[in-house]
Image (cartoon, rainbow, N blue to C red; front, side):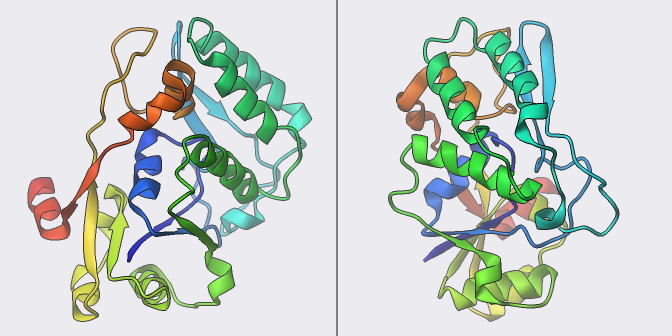
Amino acid sequence: MNIVISQSMLFPWVGLLEQVRLANVFVHYDDVQFSKGSFVNRVQIKTPQGMRWMTVPLVDLHLGQKINEVKVPPTSTWGKTHMALLENSFASAPFRQDALELVANVYARDYANVGELARASLMALIEYFGLDVNCRFIDVQSLDISGSSSDRVLSVVKRLEGNKYITGHGAGRYLNHELFERSDVAVEYMAYNCAPYPQAHGDFTPYVSALDLVANCGKLGLESINSGTTDWRSFKNESA
């Protein structure tokens, strides 16, 4: 049973969708501290004028707030700016209408907090590519598991009867791999292929919102969501 645990991200890059593709269970992990500069409320967009950040404004952010506690203004006050940025980016893309409608549907309502908004944007991409068919989605709060860092992550995996934890590269800075091994849980890191696809505005880059994949490839973009994993020891050796 493959478990992926991740904070929600605003219309994330393809790499997060690849984690979903490999997961049997995906855990939304939005009851942890919001980190300024994270991808919860912003993502890069490739435009004719170069790379631009698409950012959701926050209301009265203060230190120590959890992702699911950070408020956002009504979508009507900033959503049109995002749509204009995307229209500029995707002007010549063959499936631009798919991408724009996907965003418009997410922005058609207001959200209680930035985590709820980011989760809706992530799920819209997941559903577009059909990645929800073989994966179950859980809010970590529904599991009522306390603790922090590696201990809590391992407890979540064990509660879900997982035997493999798949994660992105950021976990390499804090994860206690031996703790997982002692519980017979394998840890594997993403081995991102960063598979190129037809893309406008200069040289290809994978580090933009997966909306770019939607706009340029439509449903066939699923073929580019194809990365695998590597075991944690190999990952650590390669990173050293």
